[in-house]
Length: 78
Image (tube, rainbow, N blue to C red; front, top):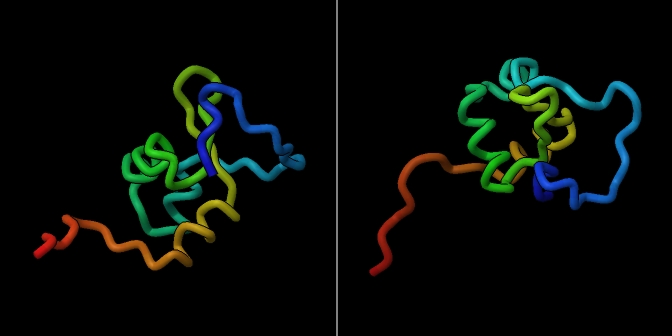
């Protein structure tokens, strides 16, 4: 899902579904800065609120982790 920086997403979240990246980092084992990068790239759903604070959902984190992410450089094509 793309991030909602520009407000283009039309789905609605229920109360209490948003979590700060600090909690998302604890749940996922990833750093807050890496999660921010994933959100900015549109790999993980998230939104920026209050000027500089990023939020996501537990579902977005679980969905990302089930994709078997492989960090690091991509293998070179032959």
